[in-house]
Length: 342
Image (cartoon, rainbow, N blue to C red; front, side, top):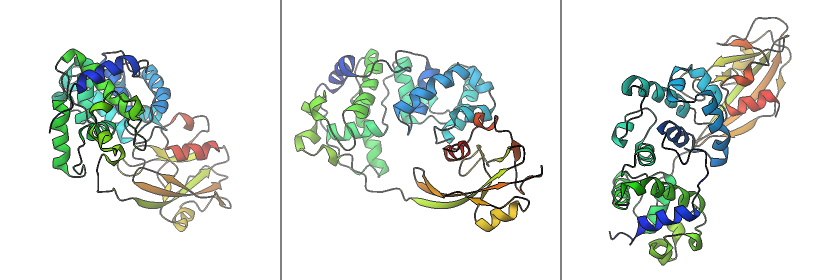
């Protein structure tokens, strides 16, 4: 495939004039900050990360502080960002950076990729931004940009086709290593602000003159991906047990499965199982159920609030937690909203 003329140069020049310049994780070569932002930005909007990033740095200013923290503290600060496996891997990764690399992030993408939660594209981003390594990124936004520019119509659901796009992405890199940070940022910026999934703003694109999808008049036809992820659903009955002191009964979820490692109201598969778990509770109050949408799964949540007069708890793993304590714990977003009465 013939590569577009001057692609990298056009991207670098455009980023300097029109790209994003003032995000808090930019203009730094600190791999800890770049890594943290890259993990937070996976599946999460920039506007959301702008709130979490400074709070996280305030509590864990460096990789040593993060590695030394209890996992529950990390999950509590992550609460509301979703995709909690990211937080667990973040914690494991910090510990491995301390244990395997003496507290210093490795400089090569190849080595970064051996750390928990760091995939090929994230490793390349850290290496490019911090160490100017000529290593290609290929996240969802960049796949869209490159398939459109190249007119790459192979099915991205097929592994060999994605592998071929990786090779093309590597071929498109600027020759000068010094251009790598700005070029990498340019790809991210273009995919996030101009070359959008449902709208290609070709008039604002620095590479529109060499874009094959635009020349064909069909930018939204790319990327091609035939295999759709199957959605599933689950019905969860939530026991909202409150004692006379206003404490709520919370259990720590298993390390695998829904809400892994977080604190939650006890979860049951049926109404009868829930009611049997706390016979001492007063007349059950049925909260209107609602659907909580995850990426590949719909959770149909049925909360039942019950008040108790004594100190004995439900017949489930857990503990009574004071009303002023649970807001600082790692809770799934729907449980937090429920307890807060929102």
